[in-house]
Amino acid sequence: MSMVTNGVPTLLECLGRHPGFRRLQGVLRPVARRPIWWAINLPKPPRLEYHEACKTCRFVRASRAQRLTCQRTFLNALARAGATRQPHTFICPIQRPAFVIPISQENQVTGYVAMCHSERPFPATAVEMATLAVGSVARELEKERELTNLYESIQPRCIALSTVHTIHRLINSTLNFDELLPRLARLCAQVLRARRCSIALVDPDRRLLILKAVAGSPSLGRAVQAPHPVERPLKIGRGVPGRVVAACQAYLRDGVLAVPLVDQECLGVIMVEGKQHEAPFTAFDQEILTTLAEQAVVAITNARLYAQQEKVALGTIKSLAGILDTLDTETPRGKPHTRFLVLAALAIADELGIGAEDRRSLHYAALLHDAGRVTIPDEILLKPTKLTGREQRIVERHPARGVEFMRPLEILEPAIPIILHHHERFDGRGYPKGLKGPVIPLGARIMAVANAFEAMICERPYREALTIEEAAREIQRNAGTQFDPRVVEAFRRLVRRGKLRPLVTRGVARASA
Amino acid sequence: MSAVPAKIAGFFHEHPESIETARGVATWLGIPLGDVEPALEALVAARVLMAHRSRATTGYSLTSDSAAVKWIKRLLGRRGH
Image 1: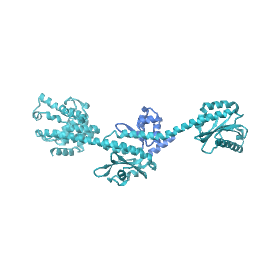
Image 2 (image 1 turned 135 degrees about the horizontal axis):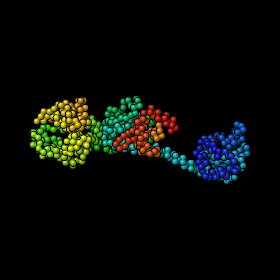
Image 3 (image 1 turned 90 degrees about the vertical axis):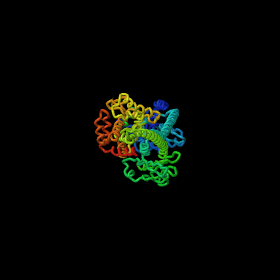
Image 4 (image 1 turned 180 degrees about the vertical axis):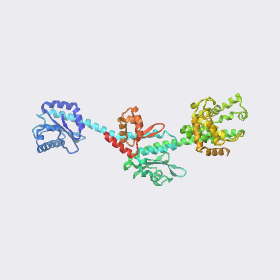
């Protein structure tokens, strides 16, 4: 089949595959011999583009003037078919039969399929068959086009929805406020392709907006460097962010899009500035940022609730630790320095880079690590001579007794292994289980070093306190036997950098106060 | 750039505002997840993509470095994307 395309290659491809059209070609072959097929697209003015198959026509081949005559005849036929929206047969300048079939969609002619250069007259049924085939293919194409349009309009929304879902997972995976807001700002800047995103929250006591997080691309230059309208606390009602919070309504203008963070009241504002490539923010951007703000409100509320809950839990644990310390202080063995121990253990943990959850467990464990000691009789604790076997067993039971006190408090569950094993030794000669090396929980290995350090540098009724350096040397001497060498190394680094001295002052002063 | 990373870079270049998980990218492009995951990490290492990591999941998005975006555009243009 010889065909020329004029913007509708799909139509011709579809026609070529259409069974009715293939039958038509079979019917026409004996009479038409070497027909020339055309597909002409609208709404452009119809234009004939002569092609390879046209070389079979001696008239078109002969001269430019004859080619123009051919074109006029053809365009006339197209006009007639278009006007009547019916197939039109005609005779070309060299007296060969031809036909044109208009393609109609929604009562409009959108193109034509034509055949010319038939050697002999073709039967009328050939035009009917061609009309049916063209109509059928046109309907298929229309459906395909509708599907494509639908896909093209739905796909960006599906991708946006999927992005919102991913962001929901990313922001709800943390309850840490300091981690949440910068992450949220980065994600909003990314999704909106903004040069800068800032999040400011309302300080309910002072009725001010406080900037909490800013994110921007490092390649964006001045936009990020420029002073930000909410870098200093901003009165509600002032500036774009303040007005958004006051009115609790979004703002979209001049390359700035800001939406309020609304729960039962307005919690704050997310603002994006300077869309990349200088494009303006759109209503669709506003829709997306509003959806993200809704997700953000849930995450912010959860993080706040979690922070409050943690504060309550820590307060309870501190009260409990205070009661235990008081009980301990009433014995003649000297004041315990729990606060210093906590600070030292957390400093070592930070030096080792342990995660937030493990750090929190260590914090709780450090506060309550020796709760079980209240069960040891004073005559054993203060005995100046070597303990008997029975007395030693009583001492070794105190971590387990302490754990028994803690078990009813569910929040302390992750701290229990640390409390239970903080008297284990790295070489396996500790108690209560005789665990060895890395089998001992890391928190317990950190506690062992911090506990020994606290014991050495704090004065006891029966001995003088060691200096930090003396205590550090003693701990170093026991690395690999009593203590985990990795933990000792972290501890030594803190000593070298002088990081423990302020903690000693703070911790001991607090305990003595 | 081999076929899978090129397809992924093409997807993010076409949808620069999207943040997708590896599973999401695999679904959009019809590529097995096992092929998508290493390709995404390779593109992050090459600074074509950014990874937003959390304990729950990792989201990937196009770099916001405009010079890198232009380079990706040229590269994809040469590949006929």
